[in-house]
Image (cartoon, rainbow, N blue to C red; front, side, top):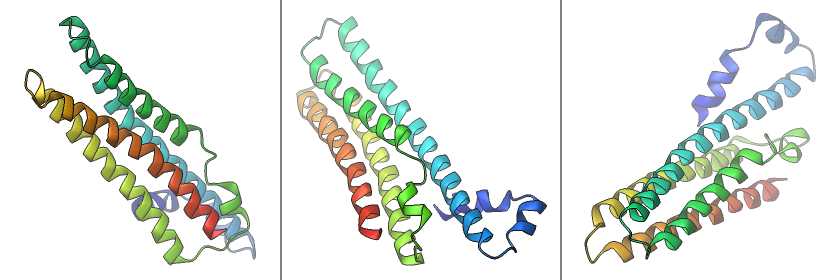
Length: 172
């Protein structure tokens, strides 16, 4: 996660670097860089989870084409949870203005937030594996359990993202 912030920081132009020497202005620049890094991170997370949502949609299409309508509602729940997560990530205010405007965040608190974001990406890996498990379970007795597991993972994803706001509120 620090790599994203470093990437944004390394893109400073000479004027910005010069202005950062003005007392008080560097704090403004750091807040802007954090907002930019947060925006970049969340755009990447949303793109990654959009891929998973599309994959679930493809599973739905496959079941519908094969006349297997039994699992469509459950897969729709997973697709809707993924879309809800994508919408929350994409539409949340970048940089959490209350967090970035006046609060002086220490490195330990920032590390907690980055760890949280990393956990979201790890959940993405679990969801990807869950989708693969559903695909591998087609025409087996394990299909219902694989779909239930995927739905549970997507539900956990939305709940986990909502927990990020709780961390930010605690820091404020």
